[in-house]
Image (tube, rainbow, N blue to C red; front, side, top):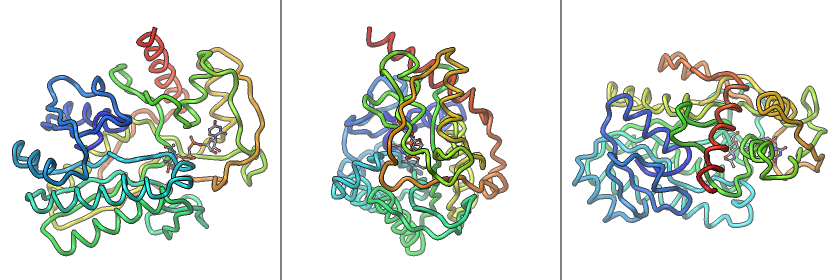
Length: 325
Ligand code: UD1
């Protein structure tokens, strides 16, 4: 697994371990944390673009499948520094795929994103909704989807691109969570504010075409997302001729105000809300049609409840504070 020391990857390590799959993590620790990887998981510190290191790791550990989480994820940063995104996401993935195929890896699971849809014409968004990214982050991920599609036609490898909607929450057992300092995600930011690490929460836009005027997103619990990766791995191994592109969301949306209300409720606080202008490139509403993943994998989300997601995020935020003090 690449990026196993990061937010989503560290949850996927736990899900794979729970399912009995042996895991090896490669991570350059630029945004990830060594402590987020369990001690019984072999850990290779290095870059996924380093083809010699990747090839060596694959052979040494007899790797049969790669789950590729490593990458850069901040949309506004991708607008300011697009080449960083084309390097860390697109070019690094190209090297990784080449090293994987050359070393005999047969299955590839890729962390794609709802950002590949841009501002969709329809809601909910299905997998066949045209992918028209509106920022370099979305393009960098869509290009990797394309490389995988082309490679799967030419080589003896199949792949699953999982298009994540808004990932939030933390491991219900408190083993890992979103730990990046300066994170920009709404639930992370609101959790920090609830615990007094920030004075207020900005609401970026209240004139969207949504019921309460604030942006609507499909928030999915990170542990349900991690479970979907285990199902994807099973599916790729069971049917090597088939590749998949699937939305990962719950198929319903919450507004920014819904989320802040949930944080108030769960944390027992009243967050200070600050109205601000829209951020560049924010769609009004982004909701998944998740029927394909439900039907294909029999995926059964366990934490499809906003208060549960917020509660787990808050619990993790508290344990981060205790760790820091
Ligand atoms: C997130 C992901 C992106 C993914 C997308 C898929 C990150 C950093 N972003 O983007 O990779 O492609 O989901 O749907 O991982 N908001 C506020 N105040 C805040 C922060 C956010 O009002 O302080 C609002 C935003 O305007 C938006 C919503 O909350 O309406 C969610 O924003 P955010 O958590 O930043 O995620 P996305 O931009 O949707």
